[in-house]
Image 1: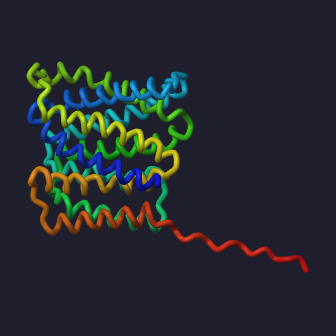
Image 2 (image 1 turned 90 degrees about the horizontal axis):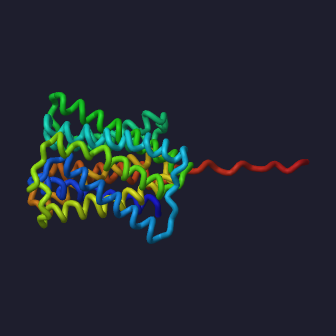
Image 3 (image 1 turned 30 degrees about the vertical axis):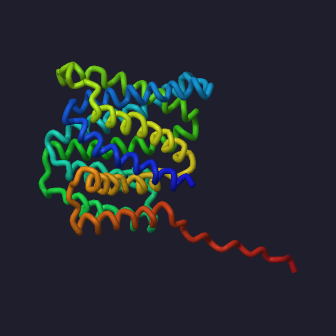
Length: 287
């Protein structure tokens, strides 16, 4: 059940790509991220009040939230700024490389994980078809993948040590505060914040549904190893490609379909198929 829940949340993450792409026609990227996390913080705060859950603010959870927020913030900034210097296909492929970085950083490299990671990387390459050249945007996006890998690893540890709803709330609040200066840095016009249908739908998906998906992720990471979480998240570009193909009319050729199929297969191999259990040891009766 936790892995299935995580797979469904990844569908929401995938939906944020076409929603964000449409919204960015109106508003600069960092200003959009500010609104997204501000809405998320408000929704998490409202849930805490309605559920009568206490917001823990002891030193341990504040330090844990600060560490996780650094990785989360750096991931989004590197990804967004990197997009100014590289193509969307390169960004999608390089961002998803956290599927490689998580088991490497944790040194969890058994045969099944290595097979799943290799299949997913080949599938990602076929799906997004990145260019072979490397520029500053690509390097920033690789940094984004490392940051997101660090965030996944942080959540595996911190959600098992601290109150997960409070950890979520503090991350949303801290990330919102960190994005506030972006409004002046980007010199965002007042018209960019006009409540158009496209912007409201984009915020509803990224700030509303995605915040709920983030909460589910934090619950799942109390139960599922980080390397399996990363493998499930590798299906995010698949959902994004399928939804963009269906709703935005973007093309998806045979390589894209084969690549997405390989990614789904890798997720099944690495996260849903349980490894064979060793046979129970026989107990020898005393003679």
